[in-house]
Each structure stands twice: as structure tokens, then as C-alpha cells.
Picture 1 (cartoon, rainbow, N blue to C red):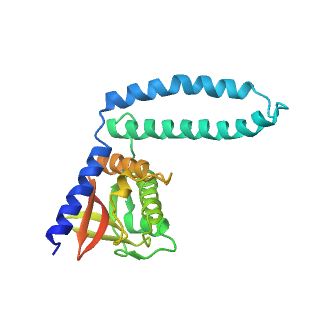
Picture 2 (cartoon, helix red, strand yellow):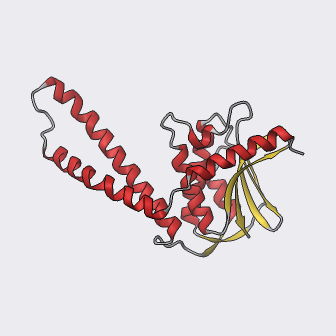
Picture 3 (tube, rainbow, N blue to C red):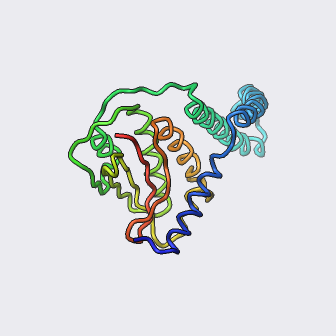
Length: 215
């Protein structure tokens, strides 16, 4: 059974996760609009510039500027996708597929504990994308990449084992450019549209990031 300390830590982690995704769809839409206009103008100007200007200082700076602007453009596009999944403007498939088979593809080379077969109805591609991003985020924190899948109380539970010795709230708010926050936002959007949820849970003192889905 989880100790009081583990329960308190778990509540803190789930609160951080909830705060991360608490923005309203209207606010996200407004922010995306405010970002896209100047970003499109900056990219257009960048496209007019020659690859080499003859000025060593500019020639060193322009590639860095280009990479950063395109990175921002990618992030804006991903936020728009997550927002569209959350509010339903991006449709998801509803087709039967084998969940353990999908997890075996995602966790190739990692430890996987799952039934031999198990059908679920949903969007295989979107769930696969979300689970891949979660696995990468957990590994970036130092996790071993272990995935456990089981039917619990009539629901599928896909659990990614988190590292026990470091504060796992970094998974929600930590920096370092690992994309953990975006991975979690995408997972919550996709799993939420499937009628499930994503949360941190503790089993026998070990923390897991769990995605729970209807069978």
C-alpha cells in the first residue's frame, strides 16, 4: 500500500499535471493567433535573405536564428494540434486494434509486460504517437523505459515506470528542452478524447505515469 508520503507526492504531481493543461481553448486560440502573425512575418523575411551575406557576424547568426524560428513554428503547430484534439475539431478514428501489439511496437528494445492480446477501439496512430512521446519523456528523466499494461477494474491501464530517486514533478515542469510538457499535453488530449485519463500513480513504492483507457 502507498505510504502517506507517497500519496502526498502523488497528489502534488497530479496537481502539477492538471495546472499544466488548465488553459481554456479560447485562450490557447488567441495566443496561437498572436504568435503566428509575427512568426510568419519573421520567417518570410528570413526567406528573402541570402545564405551568405559576406558579413561574418551575420553569417554566424542567421543559421541560429533560422533554427530557432523554425523550432518555434513547430511548437506553435504542435500546440494547435493538441488544442484541436482537445476541443474535437481534429477528428479521431474509432477502429478496433490490438493494444498490446501497439505497445510492443512502441517499446521495441524495452521491457514490456502485457497480455498476449487485447482489443481496444480508438485511433491507433494518435495513441501510438502519444505513447511514444511519453516513453521518450520518461527515458529523458532517467527512467528504464519499462511499460506495463493490464486490465484494472474493467479498464486498460498502460503504465510507464518513472525513476524512483528523482522528483518526478520534473516530468511536468522541468526544463532542458526534452519536450516533456508537450508530451504530457498531447497524451492528456488523446487519451482524454478516448474517455480516459493520464495521472501519476504509485504501486509498492514505485511511481508510474499511467494512461487509463476504456476497454
